[in-house]
Amino acid sequence: MPSLCREQALIPRPTRLALRSGHFTLDATTTVRATPEAEGAADLLRSLLAPATGLPLAPSAAGTVTLTVDPHLGGLRQEGYGLTVSPHFVLLRAAHPTGLLRGVQTLRQLLPPEALAPAPGIVRRERWELPCVEITDVPRHSWRGLMIDVARHFHDAATLRRHVDLLALHKLNVLHLHLTDDQGWRMPIASHPRLTSVGAHRAQSMTGPDGTTGFDGRPHGGAYTRTELTSLVDYAAQRGVRVVPEIGMPGHARAALAAYPHLGNHPDRILDVWTRWGVCDTILGVHDEVLDFVRAVLDEVMEVFPSPYIHLGGDECPTTEWEQSPRARARAAAEGLPTPAALHGWLLGQAGDYLMEHGRRPVGWAEDGALLPPGFTVMSWRDPAHATQALRHGHDVVLTHHRTTYLDYAQDDTPDGPPAQPGPVVDLRTVHGQDPEPDIPAVGGRILGTQAQIWTEFAPTTADLDRLAYPRLCALADRAWTGPTTWAGFTSRLRAHIPRLDALGVRHHRPTAPRTTAAPASTAPSA
Image (tube, rainbow, N blue to C red; front, side):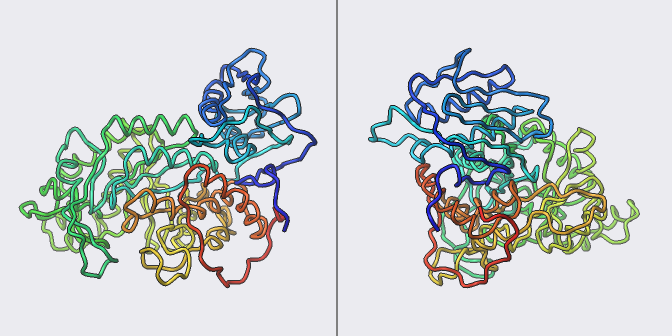
């Protein structure tokens, strides 16, 4: 297949694109005009392109590049945009400022790859050419994201900002931060300082998967400051990315219990922050002090994160401690629950109700077909059938099936490849082949979209995050924004997109051998 020109190699693929003859020249005389509602997008355009191209792109009332918000373009919805590049002007229009942010990223991709980031030692061009195109672009799904687990291995705020930039380039709009787990608590809570002074540090880490016996003998720790988190939220918002925090409960809470043992089912027991992977059997208690703790933590979470969605975890919660605890059994009886195991839904319901009272929407992981309390948005990860069950019970759903979205799984069959989470191979073709909207009838809830997951047991470095995310996240971004595209069309565009990743310093995975699985049936035009 012949190589594609830049306007044909966009990821994600635009809804509608028409090629025109000629090009628009960016040079020192190019200026940017923005209507008042478009100023944020114009600032982003200048901050991204001026350093990389060496051009001033100064604001002007008579700019040759115009950004405008036009509420009459209601058919484009919040994130849609229209882009016209002619030989004499560039016009970017949207019904909402967020749509302009998406169009800015398309403009970046229309430029040569070296215009995406300043390269040290390279003489910058005096002129840059944009191909003439007419684009109308509207996303298929409203939730298009990436979850990064910063609890198993801490990744600093600068790393997260870099990933926000990459998400925005691919028109992904959610960064889901898994902030707490058995192995670490990363968000400061002023009312409970030991969560980070104690809970953010563990003595060592496993070197293999759960069930092995090797440990590295090296302490690991780290926590964000409140300022770092609020700055990250602001930075992401300027790029049209929402940061969704996750505070896990009732299970995956060993780090919190190491800091505050009285929150557990054995208040006198001294615990360490867990050094193993897998599922820990120590969980939160259900007494009143725990409810006070949950509310105090969520109060500070809501102060830092304006996201309408707050993730409460909810997965992999062994209930043995409740079944053996007189206090938990008494709570179950007092609440009219049939068994202590039912305290799982009760405690999540208490936390979820508290969020909803404050205008937020609780999110939880769904597993084993168990339904989360009313009002929860469901992330169905274990079995696609759980999404159908949740929809039938009126839940909104984000599709996160582990066999198609878990990027910590191996991405090829190389026997001596880097360590990976035990599980199926999730290669580029598998991610591309997943459909964020399977054939599920409208039964109450809505499918909001999809997101990828990077659990970080085997991703301690920034290079590991790059390798796991890219280029597989390009495939998810394409499917979530555009919908189904053919494998041949996607891979042609991806080959032209890889130089963009290289220009941005992304240390992406490079496959060593092709997979032999049969190609999926064609479901869309070849591009």
